[in-house]
Amino acid sequence: MSSAKIVQETEGSWRPDPFMKLPKGALVKVLRQDKKKGTLDYLIRWPEGYVEPRHTHEGSHGVVVLQGRVIAQGRELRRGGYIYGPSKKPHGPFEWHDDCIVFVHFEGDPVHVYKKDNNEKVSRNIARR
Image (cartoon, rainbow, N blue to C red; front, side, top):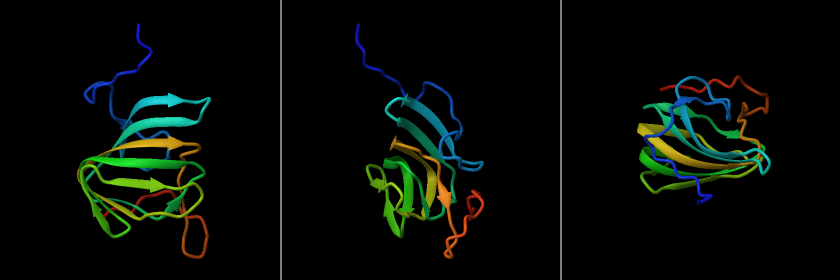
């Protein structure tokens, strides 16, 4: 018997994000989580026009665009495009378009922190266009 975990995109259900603490709109589908190692593999479905402001988080992540497109810090990425979000370093904004779906591998704490230019924390609300 194989120890590999195999999941089809059609398996499982899309649900509100419990990891990054994103507001309503973005949905996730967990593929694999290892709490001991602090790793998480999941899919995120971003609705048209969803804007994720510049932010930081304690952990780091790699993101691969599977469907749709994202404007990442002014650069357009489509299927196969890659984003690395470093630990504790500001990155973004990200503008999600065309019912974008991405694969994310997170290592460490994924909770996003959004700050104003004057370093005051702001609400975790995501601006919509």
